Length: 102
Image 1 (cartoon, rainbow, N blue to C red):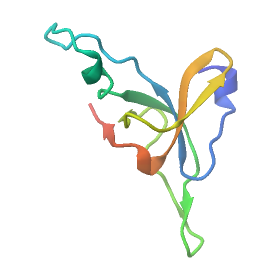
Image 2: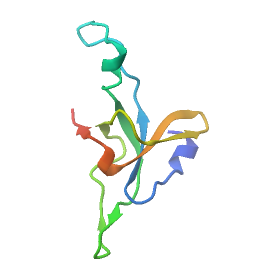
Image 3: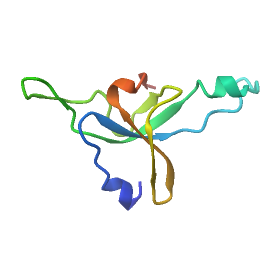
Image 4: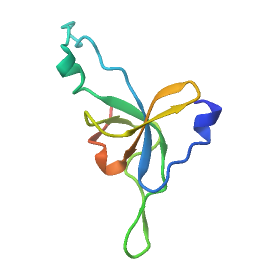
């Protein structure tokens, strides 16, 4: 992680994600068409905010942590360009579809 990314601290329930490249081939070697590749959006969490504050003033922590692999929606997120990092996006935690555990 670069020095600039180490200083990046999202607010509330926002998460900074580095998108992974979509695979052009499946594990079996089948070439995937463009419409299928766009549906296989994955990323790695590089920074997380402190969490959402509920009506009682209690902070609710996020369910993802730095280093988690996640599945993302086709659209959404705000693109960031910080230094040489051009594939970073900011999502709200509820917009993340799933966390991948291996």
